[in-house]
Amino acid sequence: MERILREQRLLGELRVIFSATRQHIAAVKRETGVSAALLWALDEVVRDPGVSPGDLAERLGVHATTASNLCSRLKQKGLIRSRPNPNDRRVAQLQATPTGRKLRDRAPQPRSGVISTAIHALDDQTLDAATLALAALRQQVAALGYSDDPMETMTGS
Picture 1: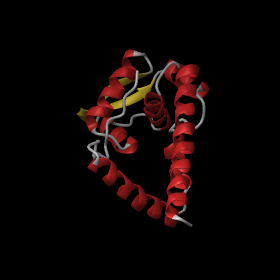
Picture 2: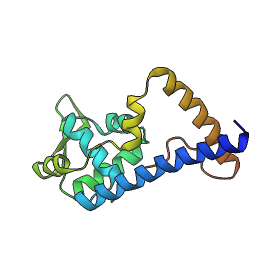
Picture 3: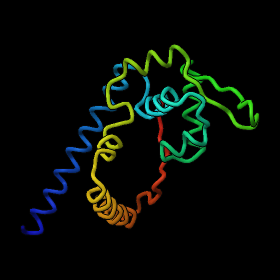
Picture 4: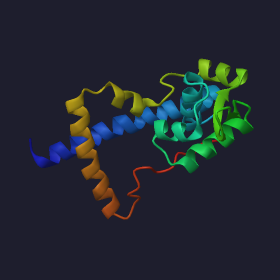
């Protein structure tokens, strides 16, 4: 295949992925009133009551500060609460409130987002090839002066 056709095919594939992601983000916001990032964090808390903010950050693939900000927003909205771990009072345990569980239960699927859910479904060989290809593409984007941080913060209201 001619290079220009291969480039166009890749651009087309990326457009489809970005479009699906935008549609999902809009649906989550429209149907729940919270961002997709908040929904994913809430989903993790509902699925694992007592999860720590540090473990939540690891599951979401974000910095601890970002997870803390997500937790603060979820608490402000009355969707989760935090309690000290009885075995180590320095560590918080997160739990969804009844309101949080109801919101999560009525939220559109996939609750962890389109891209992360699709990645989870890839076989090992495809996952490895996609990781290498996207890492190379990310390096080219960074060379254009855009973020090279793979743990870019998630935002949401």
